[in-house]
Length: 140
Image (cartoon, rainbow, N blue to C red; front, side, top):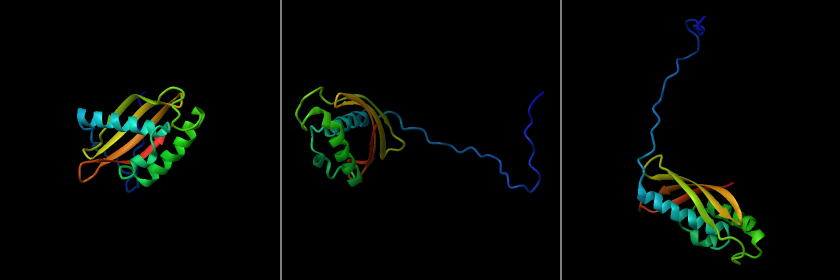
C-alpha cells in the first residue's frame, strides 16, 4: 500500500511548491582566510582585555564596539586586572570562513579567552575602498 497525498480541490488556495536555487559559497580564497584569521586574533585580544576596544574604531560598527566592550569587561574579569597577562594567553583555536558573496565574509571561530573556550561568530562586509568592516559579533 502506497501513500498518496490528497489532491486539493479545484480553486483551492494551495499552491505547488517551487524550488528556488540557493547560491553556493564562493570558492575558498586563501587571502580572505588569512585576513579573517588576523581579524579573529585581534577580536580575541580585545575580548581578553589585552587590546583596547578603541583600536577597532573606524573598522567596526558602533553596536559591535559596545558589545565588545561589555564582553571584554565580563570575560577578562577572572584574570585579575585587565591586561595583567595573568593566566593563559588569548588564542584562536580554529577559524572557518564562509563567503556568501564576494563583498561579505561570515566567520566562525573557536577561541580561548580567560582560560575558557568560547565560540565567536563575526560578519564582515567589504567597503567600497576594499577594506573589511565588522558588522556583527557574537560570543558564546
